[in-house]
Length: 323
Image (cartoon, rainbow, N blue to C red):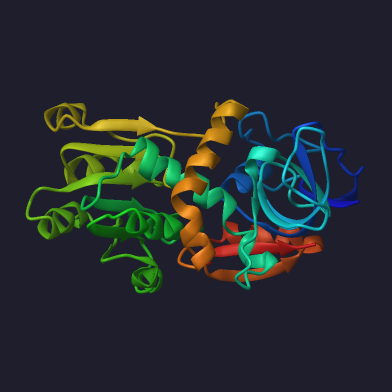
């Protein structure tokens, strides 16, 4: 089968053997695959948990039709339309653990739209609901809100009852569109005054929950913008892996600072994350309330160009490959 594989000089389109599903896996004929920032890290030579390295088939989420499954998989038939998360999605066929395979709703959702959802839904539900412990009426700030995962995060926060949703982007054009995806206020995290803006719209208290996809240069701003007994969930590091951190302010406000990643979780933990997400969010997915804009679609043969488009950081929403 055709696949986009990590090579010494970037992605290479090569023929590789079709994967064979293990007892707990589902084989899918891939129709579309979503791009994620972690794909770029692996293409640059970094490991993503146990994934990455020369010869690895890229891709963390995809959609398509069930083409086979292992003996422990129940409730699926060949030909069922599904969306999946895992590894190896930049290919004509891919396998996913049974706990990370979701039915595509019968609501006119196409393969391209379905391929944009699996990673974002699980990541942001885990960050907002499980680790962020969002309660109805609480104010939430999503840092890096114009990314695909960020746009879903704002919608999920609204779906789960957030009272005020704030999204950040350093790009004026993208900030202007955040309201379409749940933002009550859009801020520029590149403006040093942004924490004061956040406190102004929360009557001086600050936000109760911050979902941080930037880290690096906004860490101290997050502490300033957070309420006493606030919660900060570190999801991503788009703005840097290290930076200044005001430990005294962290202690003064008694902020819970929580790091999350899928890289060190067991398959049982990941299955539970998926189960909780479906329990809370699947009615909204089926109803079409959780959606993402598709910025551009590339054929699988142009996977390197698709990643270059993401690397240029000129997109809004998701970039998709079609096989």
